[in-house]
Length: 88
View 1: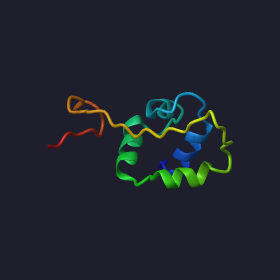
View 2 (view 1 turned 45 degrees about the vertical axis):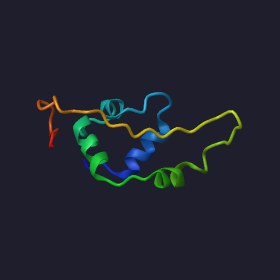
View 3 (view 1 turned 90 degrees about the horizontal axis):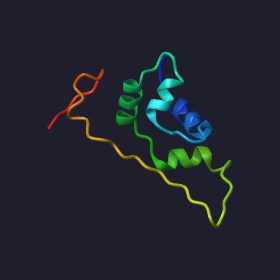
């Protein structure tokens, strides 16, 4: 099974609380956390792409906020994890 932009956007839309790659991988039998991580690292997923896919279902509220966080943790010591590598 190939992981696609549509898969990721649908996950973000349907997840109510936990938006982590680990949570997503737990719900997909044939896709590992490492494969999803690699996909997100190599694919260009812009905030505009996500917004274009969700703006019709977002209800504006003066007290509400939308936060996009694309933090990536340092994995220099995770050589044992499938498809992870560290380059200087």
